[in-house]
Image (cartoon, rainbow, N blue to C red):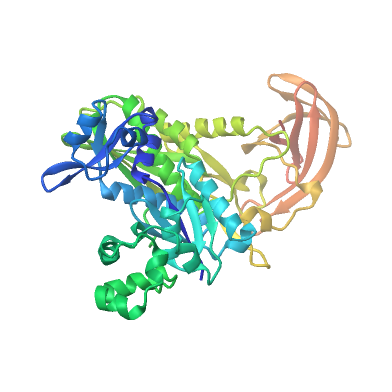
Length: 503
């Protein structure tokens, strides 16, 4: 098997800049509590240039850079953000394993789909760049080899052929080994992994024991550590604790964008699209508000969901400031994407989605509905209005998933055209007919309208077993000043009725 490793230098600092773009280029540090003292866990590039280092006390770092800003470092937040990025990579890699807080392994078995392992690495880095992260990717046959080269190598992309791991690792510093393993070799004055790999096994075991033997094996490019794929959560939910409670919508929207970006990354990696979401606001000092959001069409686009969330939350009046935010996907469906015809405008389509979703959220889910076909021959009863749900999928004979509409039996072209507006019940026409029964004119909308053209008949009959069977001859009739209409003559009484109008 072949494994890839993605390394993000100071991932927590990168994440902080992505979430708060105003911090770009400024000195800041992420601080954690260690034995009663606040110490720097990660620092920005500007802070590093000023002399701040990981492990340094916050007081010492402030002395070196008075303008230093500091924020709380939470390991669980970093792991969650990294896991979200790992799920986004599921579109190119079948599995991943976290190496928090600065990297993750991924299964490189899908490399042939991208023209080889180098092409896979390029695609992986492209996905990461799309989410704002800069990293290095290495593919090798061992977990340690790929991780060590990604963390301590200089190339942004590298592929190590099978059997060449020892040669690739030879020039790396001893820092590539974990602290307990490298201590004996550092004491002997060694500085590279190649020097450790050249030592005799007996001498290494005598001085370093099992720990030293393990390190020696890794330096020789041999690693039997198993790849343990991360278990995906069934419940799609993202949450974030704000640095300071938000009293207005402006500071809240930055957190909203971050949480939605992560959630949509997870949806995209799983090839899913959200249908219904729930926003939960944790108030300070107490209280919680939950708001549902129903989409007009399944979507995994962060920008669309952010626009809808702004509309849903911007006018909300709360008794207390917001301390935390979470978003949960209540319902989702397969994401088939969207096929646009030539000339379609994606921006206009997205704007329509926003309007429809706002209506559904504001007026209720029942305000938007779709026409569902019914197994009834009578035209005015051939469909019913139903609440929107993603179309059910079925399988073709080849085993492919197809929308239900694509597998239905096609209807003859002559019977396909139907009016866009059907009356709930046919309306009797005050009609003028010839001696032979041909329609000449009819009174519609308060005036006499002459028939200018007429096509038909199309005979529809059925339900002979019911109490009200029907037998009708349908015509497409063009009335003067009105346009085409769908009209039928009832065989039972010989009268004309209006069934619907064409747009």
